Image (cartoon, rainbow, N blue to C red; front, side, top):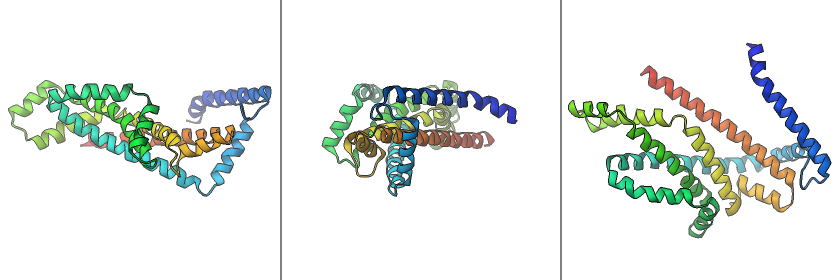
Length: 253
């Protein structure tokens, strides 16, 4: 077991060491910490950030916006997906709307939302707009891929709408989207932070990154990016763990 674990982690350790060596070499060659800070400088900035009393509150506020935008996106995608699945005409109406949302640059979306709302709410709305089309298409594809014979059997045996939704549609959505949820959550997190960078809410990771950039503290920017990546990896594994748990529950039922 230990040998297997070392074989798995070996390439990761080696690639990380090589990356750090190249990074250190680049910082020495450039000789300007504003352009390429050394790994030691970034580590120092990271420790300073972690010592700050407001750091946990900053992370919490960003995660709160991320979770709220993700939940609203997921519930909205399921509701709208069901509606357009049963009403093909509405599906055609939704198509250009979704295309427009996906085609418009994120920066333009953020600027428009800032005109219509305040800086505290704008990042969550940005997260919703970026994630909703992704989840909606996943819901719709899951529903349209249901075997037509199963649908015919439910009608033949006059299965009630409640049990059709509970035992056929919802499980199809779950199994069809199980692999997408961690990606959608990661997209929501990145979109919310991007919204925070431009909208500058008082407590947020995006605002912290923007402040470090204004002070030309590149090591501080990279330190916050390391925090972002760490949070993203943790959330990705957490969502996947939840998915595996629910998958086992479904199979046992």
